[in-house]
Amino acid sequence: MNCTKDSEVHVTCVVSGCPRVDGDYVVDKLHYRINGGGQVEPSFKCINGETARVGFDNNNQPFDLGVQACRHRDLSENPCTPWSNFRYTPPAAAEVKCGPNDQTPTVPAGSKCVPKTQPPVQCPAGSATPTVPAGAQCAPAALKTCPPGSAKAQVPGSESCAPPANAVTMNIGGGALTRTVSVTNNSALAASCAYDAKGTGGVFAPGLNRQINVGPNGSTSIDVPAPPLGSTYQVTLTCTGNWDGKQVEIGRVVQNVSSF
Image (cartoon, rainbow, N blue to C red; front, side, top):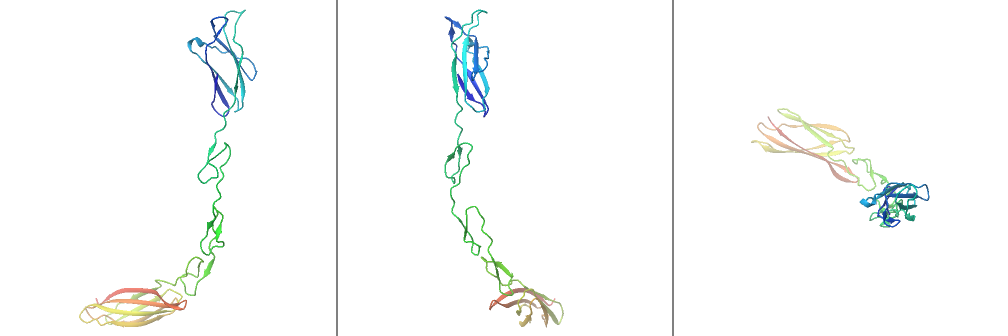
């Protein structure tokens, strides 16, 4: 007798062999009973190598399988072998494999793997706490107030405040004798701008320098001579402002201008 677990609730047992009874009579019937219950009689033509299969819903519990083989000759005499008992015990449940970061390589079936103790997480500078437990999130860094006129009024504690950048625009209008230069300051700092025009082409194109002051978030304009006939200029406007006690560049604009 050989019993195999098919699922968590069912077992199939195979009975094989071919005993003789009452001298040399080959058995042709099988009697079996489970846990001492009612007898079942299937055909058992073992002379042809036949085996008998017994299926049982055991709900993953142990049970006793009793069997005997018999030869049916006539109504008065049917010799049988003695009863034999087979005790089935379910195999031990397979263990669960754990990962490399768990405390044990395996745990019993139905259990959960337990992670190893992980070191705390180091938080960025400015966070509410220097570390947090493994798997937790660091709290955002507290905001700090930036100096007046900064690109942002507040930044996280781990960041540096920055002055405004690319905060100035310039437009040079047309005209045969004079050109109007309009400057706009988009920062909260007062801008001191250097207007520098250098000749890049033409017979007579003298350089031209002017100082232009623009208030915070303000605009202004000045008039300058137009390039001489057939001349071209490259105009560079560089603006600075007083940020956090020092002069910093807050904008630079380059524009080409011609007499045509």
